[in-house]
Amino acid sequence: MEEIRILSPTGVCGSGFLEESFEKALAKKPHFIGCDGGSTDPGPSHLGSGIPAFPRDAVKRDLRIMLMGARRIDVPLLIGSAGTAGGNVHLDWFCDIVHEIAAEEGLRFRLAKIHCEQKADYLKKRLREGRIKPLQPAPEFNEGVIDRASCIVGMMGAEPYMRAIEGGADVIVAGRSSDTAIFASIPVMRGFPEGVSWHMGKILECGAAACVSRKTPDCMFAWVRRDHFVVEAPDERLRCTPQSIASHSLYENADPYKLVECSGTLDLTTSRYEAVSDRAVKVSGSAFMHAPRYTVKLEGAEKVGYQSVIIGSVRDPFIIRQIDNWVEQLEGRIHARVKQIYGERLRPEQYFINIRVYGKNGTMGPLEPVKEIRSHELCLVIEATAPTQEMASSIAGVVRHQALHLPIPEWSGLITALACPYNPAHLDRGAVYRFNVNHVVEPDDPYEMFPTEHLDVGAPAIRRQAA
Amino acid sequence: MTLLANLARLIRSKNAGPFELTFDIMFEDEARYRRVKDSGMLTREAVASRYGLEPSQVRFFYCDNALAVKASIPRPCFQGDLRDADGHGGQQYAPLMDIEIP
Image (cartoon, rainbow over all chains, first blue to last red; front, side, top):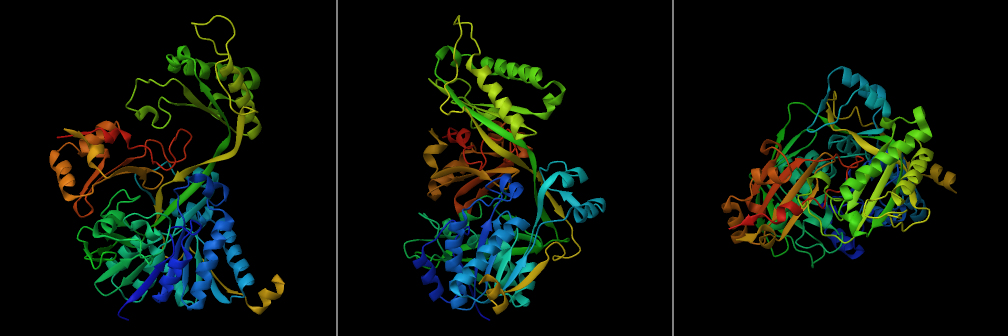
């Protein structure tokens, strides 16, 4: 095999792409289609609550085009980080859409469903063995964290994909994955150099994002060869330049030259980028160094509590000029009133009041370098987080009343200090989550954390059930 | 003397995972990139002082083939924590914009 061709329809399944770009790419005869389906970027609530970040209908639109295209030219379709976070609930959600499209379109194929959600017993065992290690910076991780977690997933490497392909899968839907592994897996198993294959994966995983100016999410295409790869967007209006492709390794990475994967590190220090046309770039010289130990990164989320929010504004220049002091007094009054109401039933460490002052330092908090403000109005966002939604809502009610009438020395008589745009004044946000792990596991092998189910989709038995 | 914001084509901040924040300062051409790189004003120390950190906490890179300067810092709040105000880390670059470049 002299060359392997890869199509990435878009950066995230559900973010969209042009169908005509996809058709142009299919005409170039890709050997497989890969697409990322998730990220931690939308935040911990998706992993914690199980709710995907992209709407079901948006995912189904993108997935239908990918599935039908892949089956039409009979090449594998690899989807990673299904349903945003890749936990069992996300994976089931995504596979349900796969089954639905297959039934609607009369498609038949072999589906490999690769799980990545980790059982508490397994994690505790590895923790006791000293085989869970912190990355920097990392929160405290212990058995209590494992017990409290709503969901902990492992981020798989390329090997579970390779094994699924060897097992005859036409379509792979995998839980949380290294975005790059989705694309590197097949080239590496076909014997192409790892430096070339992983670097190609790094560029393709974001779809057309590495183009000079991408107006909407769209497709990207690569040709992997023995000592280089070439990348080009199928849409002729999109251009890749050596600078745009070199720049892409900066995006969302702490280190632009060394990208850590389960099995080793992609090293771009000696990569060379050359224009092969005004739209295509050739990349060579990238290296991959195998790690002495295979490691799998964990991602976890736990419930912090339930939250209610009040949004209000202040226009009075007397209040604005003493806003820090006013906010401090408000916090004190809220805590005093909560103590009156709840006593020992809700101790100060069991709930949290956060007052954000937009127009002053709402975006950067203590890091805001501008200390002196000239705003003629300020927006206050006040959050109450408590063990139950009922308590959070009650505290928000306290916040509203205390903020409304908190006096300042300039005025005598009862003031109303906060303009509230909503009625009721507070919004109930439900459960809120936080990321609770930034560690790696050292497994015995690349597969033990990622059990795979092989399913015949659209087989007669399943069709009868669907009908 | 001009401000970094007047020389860069893009200054951006973004999550590098939930626990780190990364800054990219990107240039349209070699001349502007060299001017900034050679000025000695955009450095690990300059980034550290603007985000209240020790220089050892900042990872700092000149990326010649991308015509870009990159710095990464521990996230001031982990992404999504109760005090975090910027879930994607996208609006944390403003303090870099007014670095003065001769």
